[in-house]
Image (cartoon, rainbow, N blue to C red; front, side, top):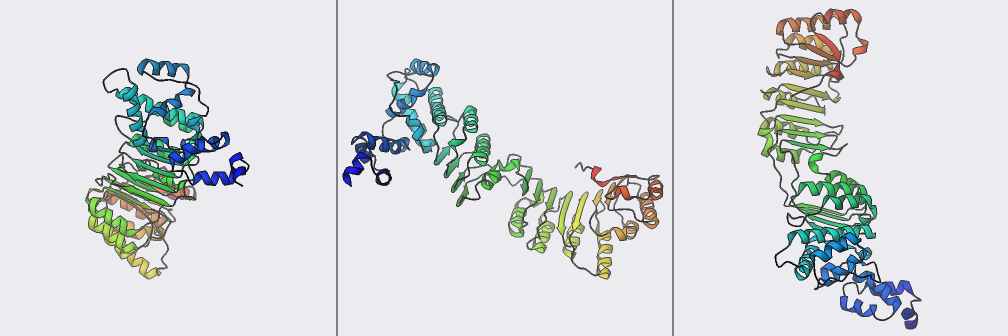
Length: 454
């Protein structure tokens, strides 16, 4: 059996033996000298992660054999004692691991050893660093592990991200990724590439990541990817079949925001409550629009009432028409825009009638825009219009079903003199006579055509 292994007649067994020597560099070097076959099996393992275990930097020169003549000419002008000759193997193709720190330190040593000038040449270090990335990508290498620590001195050129985009294989087998940086632009580019080309990640770790570009706006979107998260959500989504571990540590997070939007996402009250304790007084716009039933709805409504007194815009979709909701609306003395979509709670007609009257009475006197489409309030439209004291400028309703409602709308206009536009979701079903009568006072439009500007 030993002779068969030496002759290469049992490649699977030989491969297993060499894999067990993966971290034994000296042993792998010895194996490479045994025979042509052993050399062919050992060299790819030796060159999987040469920047981590090699003490010397001279091996870097072996990567330059594939360079074009212009690049070789550039190197010969800027460095000395560099021999660029054809190699037996395409060493760059074997690369499986890139560690930014190890790569950068080896490049620094190599440049220090070979540079013509006695001064530290940051430009040359930067150039060689990115040149190696270019060689690895174009060689057809497939990374398994990537550790990036972006720095101002040695950064990754935009050209490199473009090359990764064109060479899909480079990230196609990536399993472990560690990123430490506050460079938002590079984070964004990297995460977009991950979402597109890397689907086998099992470990994803971030440090010192600034999560928010615009400190005044924070979105959590279940159906789409928010720019403020720099592609993290889409990157995670593309890894859902393989990812086992995610860490986001030491991240800079600015809680001084004025807009919070949670859309098409599971509403969990406790983490939102914790967030509102820090930033609630600064919030002016709050949008919670989800088809999911809220967890601990009362807790969240009370948190908004307690910590968000300065809201000017509030949109809440798929919520119970509860006393807690009424208390919240009544407490917002600066509220100007309100949108409600209620879910069916099986409330009796009698109780519902009382609740709607309470709703009209607690509306803030600052309210200018009210969207009541899909709230089941339309049959009582005349009642609450006759009792509403808010100076509404825009009103959205489902329909104008009868003369009684039309007259209530006209009387509201005459009483407040503020209403100038009413959006009707069933605009095409409006009775022509009612439409003509009401439009002598206010404009009737399809509700979707009204755009909020606040």
